Image (cartoon, rainbow, N blue to C red; front, top):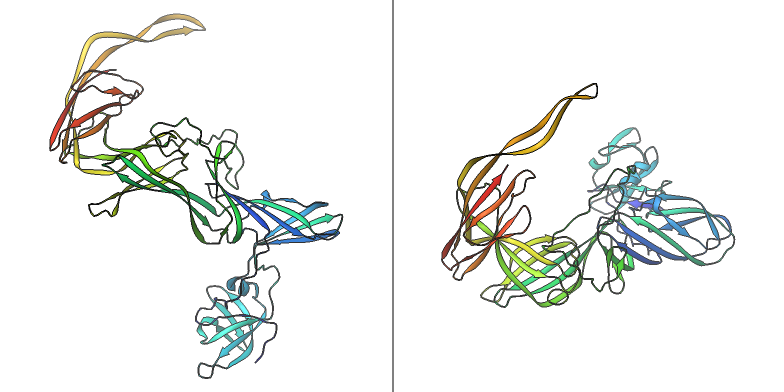
Length: 496
């Protein structure tokens, strides 16, 4: 049986799978895609078209299926835009059947022995968790009919093969001309990934940076120019109203000391731009990786770090963190601004094979920054903290807190000064640091929690000189011999 001009959908074992067909060529023109880091992209598409003269309808297929229609701008020389529509009801086996409910189709049967086809007329009754058909005077469930499929005589109105933007405009002349279409779209993401090979003996690190792109827009963009924007671009959540009282805190400092050097990269306002060399195809549902950084023999070092909370004691020794330190400066570092991403660190084993030793995320990092990346916990370097003394010392001192006043009808009848007893607490801490490695190590020991907004904490005594890094933290560089231990003893005075 020959069926001329019909659209056939195979509905046998898998009722909603389609026959493989050649993919139509893209209707896009000269495409540029600027991808931001928050699931957003700006797409510019310049097509050479003849819109005709007068009031005309102009279709733009192959736009992103996740286009934000309210952001569309269209520049047509010699024409005025009257109306625009985005048609996103896309053709699929499921939508084809749903749109055909109540319509007549052909139910085709294939003889498994001869391979011959035969057909009969059927009406689609419903498509709810399965397709129901009326065939003659009986009701059939499509999935229960072996070796069968539906054949449709045409496409229902409203279904589009590809995401399409349609525009009604008033054109003052005919003729081919460049028409510039731009819009924002969700469905594009990118991130940076870094591979770092650390040579502990040489005190050097090799770093390669990769950009990973993902396209889930539902549309392929062949031969596009691609720009990546690093930085947090402020956006209003879709479907919400702007509230001027809302403040979006964009702080995301991950580097140990922020850099103050300007990278030799293209800038867009307060953001850095990372262009992808040449043109590339951004295929739908594809992940693509492009190298953007490759630096060898940068100075780096490994340190150990342990952070202790205020009045915190451990019953058992705890592993210190292993921390990799390096710089993004131009002189002694990577020499670039680093977009946010994940740094994965490797070291060579005794056989010379690179082995993974840990990873850590970084935020957007200016050039000239000092980075300290914890990569894991040390096996052989341990710290045990203990509160060995906690005494309250009443010195009989008083401090003025506030002046008070009682009034009647606006006239003061009694007033005075509110005072409180000044209490001193003396806290003794001991930190036992052990090292089972065959070489000496230095552990950066951090005592945090020294400032809660109320107390005044001082350090009258310590067995090793420390540095007050902030009002909340004091730091000691504790040397520990190979196969040995060091005990740090500190007295804290607290006034509250």
